Amino acid sequence: MKKLLFVTILSFLFAFQSCQEEKLSVLEVVTPQQVYDAVYSKGTNAQLLDVRTQEEYVVNHLKNAQNICVTNNDFQEKVKKLDKDKPVYVYCEKGRRSANAAKILTEMGFKKVYDLQGGITNWEESGLETQ
Image (cartoon, rainbow, N blue to C red; front, side, top):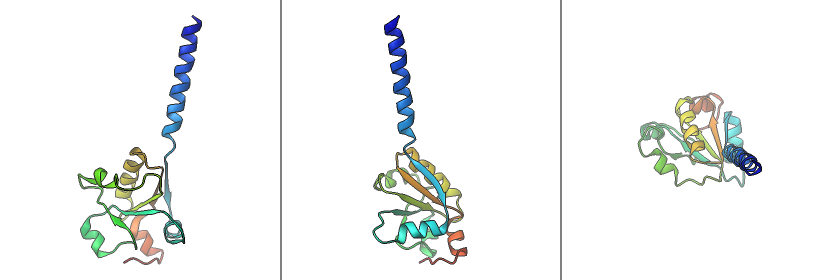
C-alpha cells in the first residue's frame, strides 16, 4: 500500500514538473515601439521574422527582417534554422498570420516569441520606417 502511494505521488510530481517545463515559452503581443526598441537597440540578439508572402515582403518590410511565409508548407522546416533560445519578433500585414506563426513557434519550443500588434500596418501608422 505504501509503495502504491509512493508511486502515485511520484507520478503526480513528474506530471506537474512536465507541465511546468512546457510553460517555459513566452508568447506576448507587443507594440511597434516595443519591437523597435528591442530589435534595433545596440547589442540586441533578437530575430525579426516577416511571415507574409515574398510578394508582400518585396513591397515593404522591416529592416533586417527574414522572410519565411507562414502559409507555405515548408514554414516549420525553414524556421528550424532560427535559434530557439533567442527572442523572435514576428509580424505580418495586420496580425492574423503572425498570431498563427507565433503559436507554431511556441509549440516548436522557441523560448520567447513576440507578435507585433497590428502588423506592419500598425508599424507604419506609428510613423516608423520600412524598407
